[in-house]
View (cartoon, rainbow, N blue to C red):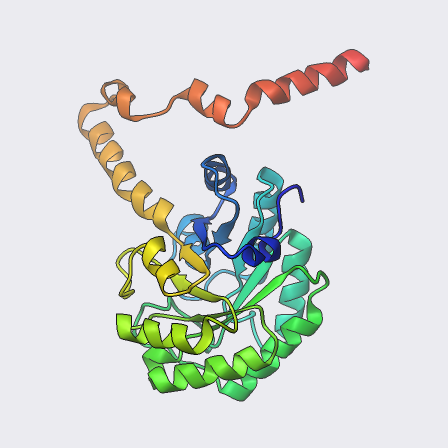
Length: 290
């Protein structure tokens, strides 16, 4: 990998801002915008590739195929949302091995019951702390590359309360994971308490999903609280959807897109973005050598 690993970037001390990616094009856009890493959100994969909500419908093999496509398209490291590990501790181990082989630089696992759902939806359920600790230990034992980050996420706050979420985070920290993610804090005061308890001991992750329940909204606020990773899991899709709807409504009503040219890229633009000329030149070089 030509870029610094997630572990190396995290050691640098600055907040990492990770936009969500879900296919080769979104990953290229993020890389070309200058971001040093990206986040593969389970929600983003389900929304974009399946056209389904974030209800645990993406399979392990579908996720692994997505990661392979992304790592072929870009060189920046990817933090991958592996949901619940796709089963018990043994399933988690296989998931870690398969996703590492596919190119994941970091893996996030949560303590929801299957079938899981978006962390900002009601009706979540969580497994026992003991079972999650076992799954985290299994994940740590299964990773083949010491640089691969293992991020432990708890969804207990919205189910069992803030105190339980803090207690689980302490237990997960003890396993030796690389970062802690307490999903969906309900107030700034809760985020301050999370920071006071953990920020000096382990990197903290936070979800900045538009329309979610986060009491903060910017990298600056997160950095001020001592958090280290800011996730923007579906920002690209949240921006794309209304613009796509507007274009389609215009096309249906007027039967043309030329009047929208100033707000669109075109064939030349997308070929430039994807380095088409460079690939054609490489092909011609091999043809001449042959």
